[in-house]
Amino acid sequence: MERQIIVKGEARGFAFLNVKIPLNDDERYKITERDKVIFSIGRKNRKPVIVKEYLKDFDKEWGNTFVIHLTAEETARLPCLLYQMQLTIDVESLGEEIYTLVNQELEVVAK
Image (cartoon, rainbow, N blue to C red; front, side, top):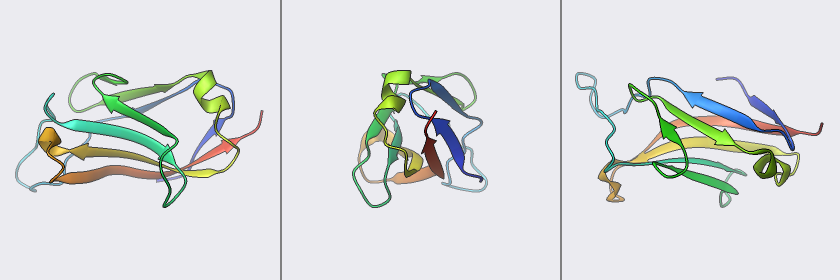
């Protein structure tokens, strides 16, 4: 995937369409409310600076599609650097089966 670029101080949304869980090739796992889906932005090998969780912080629309909104205030707090943007799932929120669904570079640039 190519690097995502956002402008510091501007609102931005991300949509992850038809997210697939790598459990079995023959079986399609349907994400439920028991699962913890986490969107995070942080510097590589450091604690994330933005963390959002499904259901309370972002929307699941249909068919394992997730929509995350960052406010202008949230992006204004990000220094202009290169970050790692991830979408992970903790199956049934047990902390035993955690999968990275999206792992992408995110660059914050000045206006």
